[in-house]
Each structure stands twice: as C-alpha cells, then as structure tokens.
Image (cartoon, rainbow, N blue to C red; front, side, top):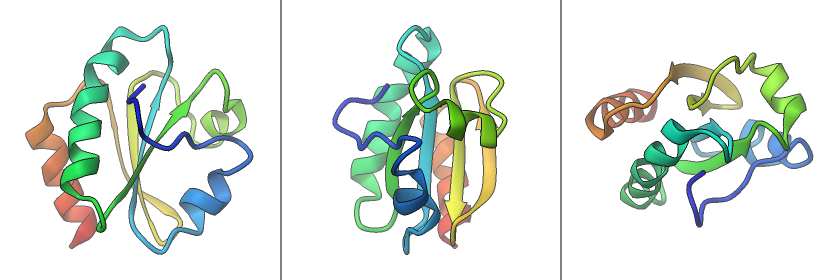
Length: 109
C-alpha cells in the first residue's frame, strides 16, 4: 500500500470518493500482496504528478471489506478511477506507469 496517501475506508469512502469534486484514483490492495507493494511507488509518483487535478488514495481490502465487496474486488492490486462519484475505469494487476498515465489522461479529459 502506498505510503503517505490517504486511506479510504468503509467509513469515509462515500465522502472521500463518491462525493469528491475531483476525479479519484483508488488503489485497492493488501499488506500481504507483493504486486501491491511493487505498484505503491508508481501510484505515489502519480499522486505527486497529478496533485491538484486527481485525488489519489488506497483501500486496504482486509480493512475495508464493504467497499471491496461493493466494487467486486476479486484480485489485487486493482485500480478504479472515479469521476462524479461513479467508477469510470478499472484495471487489475501490476501496471506500468505509462499505462496508468494514459488512463488518468482519459479520465481527466
């Protein structure tokens, strides 16, 4: 899980993600997940790069089980992009930064 990024939980997900005025990238992962740990620095870099245009945060699927269930997270890492409170794109598995940037640009367009 990406350090220094906000943690979205069952309690704050609606406020932080669904009601956000800004598009949101949500990184669903778990502490025990190796690919999640490999993805974390990429997500942290993207958070810095798109600061002010994209909200970025993480969901620990072991701690936020209601959110994980709602979005049918079957494997991690999974990234879901939200715009106007709705999921608009989803990608599962370790992704290269360039691939994620293309998806971010599409969400921001």
